Length: 165
Image (tube, rainbow, N blue to C red; front, side, top):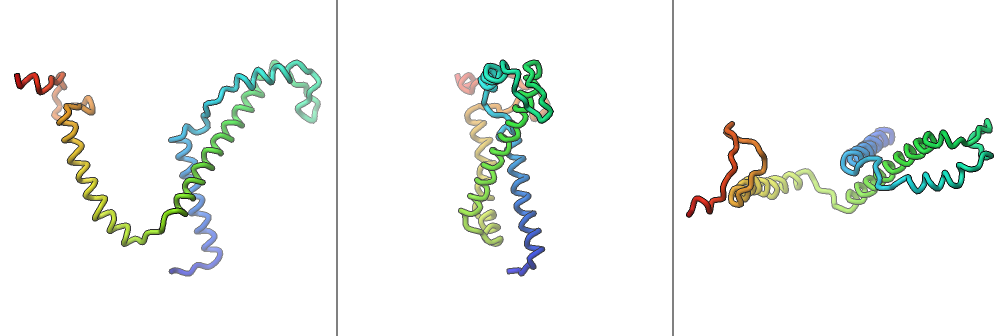
């Protein structure tokens, strides 16, 4: 095992976990809908109008600016933006937790064991899938895309039972 000094190890450690955070943020944006959450602000909006909007003596800043119902949409936009950031942060934290949990749960595999596993198990499985998938598509008469491989227009295919009459 290679020995590292403390500063080099800290930078290596920070770079590794920084990449984990970056990948989890990208995954939560691309695959978990980012800041979107299935929550309607309508009930919150009505509650704030009923409770805060009628009172003119509520001050939101140190300059004693009254809370104005006409600018309520601006406040709602600020609240929605803040909630979007919080939701993205929660999704990212869940992804980081899952990533570190999976990383700590599974044993570390040496490079030679990983290469042996890929060549002896995964490569034959992939080659088998490359052969089996077109066979299944052909046997069940499934056209997976509307693209002709020979450059000819695709006519509507009739079932094979039509030709066997």
